[in-house]
Length: 413
Ligand SMILES: NC(=O)NCCC[C@H](N)C(=O)O
Image (cartoon, rainbow, N blue to C red; front, side, top):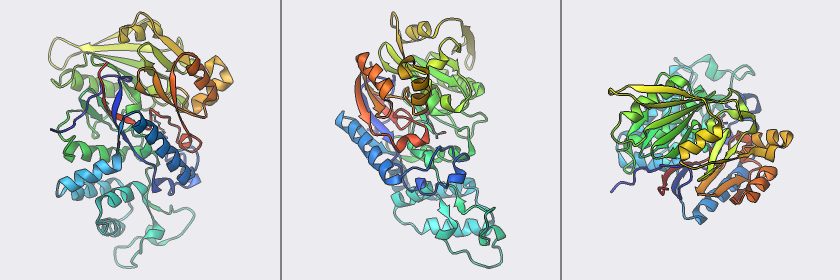
């Protein structure tokens, strides 16, 4: 029997999760490319890996099976002859390589890697001019041959944000949204999910509720499974309202999905609040961490299936966030715990380092970054059990424990 996917909440006991251990993609991250590559500093790879290994071990100690994205892709290639070639064609087409000659040289370089895991990790790391010999022949390009400050040393960009496995695809119930992401630099990450959900023996039969060739963009950080019947989605810098229209049609009118209601939260468009999960995250049956700046300002819509196949009804909910979340979770009331405990400076500082971006491994038991001491103290006093991850280097990419994980299976609550 294949394993498949099963995620009907944010808090049910976590059984299986997909991570990506930061790799050489972080070594191909020059300071002057940080903004374009959506990273905020140059991390120290060895320490980032140690921190990530500690995060994975915390999850294993809680009985969670840890899967690695890069291994799943390699297993898909091992399982299906021809899958790797198909991937390589698409990878090269989307890699932004300048000139046919260079594309040929790069293809030969990647084809020469025999081990599938090594091959996958190389595609993630990117490629620099120093790594290949460029033939001076008919068909070569000036861009390849010239060493100049105005020409990048990167032939293929690295994908430094891959360890935020939350974003390129989002598991919803037993299916998955394979996203078209907001930025060119991150959209290449969705190729790995495509090949897992197309060819991996355990995951090739799951339903897709969104596709990477869609006209509108969305990211997994905006998708929260409240329960089997209710999904919360952020309208944000990263997810367009039109993408949620598409998602709603595909989810409501797919017999595999139990979701009957989507709540769309219109959140501010800025980097500190780039996704819904940076603004609020469920941590217990009746508790959420929140960014204090969104209190009282949110516009929220409810989408439900209409009468005829493909129809979606939309209404605006004029209520407080507490009432909307209490109603969605079926609780009499919910507690919203502000990042930084309400102190404006601590809130801004710890929000910047993902103080509200926690990962629940069970109701009331959450992974948090060690550096957010003010928020962690408040969470502890509210009765939460904290699993504390080191975070000096990992946090430089602007994502927390929820961003660094994509649950594949949770126990139902
Ligand atoms: N779900 C999340 O909030 N993910 C964090 C993504 C951070 C990454 N550097 C980005 O800008 O996309």
